[in-house]
Amino acid sequence: MKAASINEIKKELEVKSKSELAEYCVRLSRFKKENKELLTFLLFDADNINSYIKILQEEIIVLFQEINATHAYYVKKSIRKILRQVNKH
Image (cartoon, rainbow, N blue to C red; front, side, top):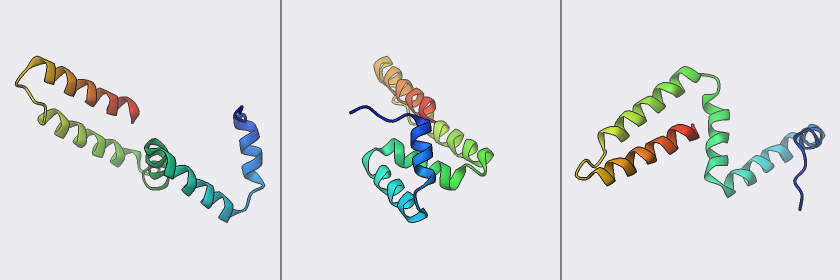
């Protein structure tokens, strides 16, 4: 099945009711964690980007403090994990 283009989706969403749109958002958030995270950002954090950035910085600092430094392999693995999270946000 071929996915519709962004313009087609936008036009179709414009004719849907408010309750149908809310139902679509809830269904979409059930399937992937990334969808739920994006919806959370748009609903709660998009208005205040500076506080969102500060929260992310604090989380990254905590992740760097928790790095297992017993072996270079674990350090490298932990840094890759942190980098994945930074790229996602």
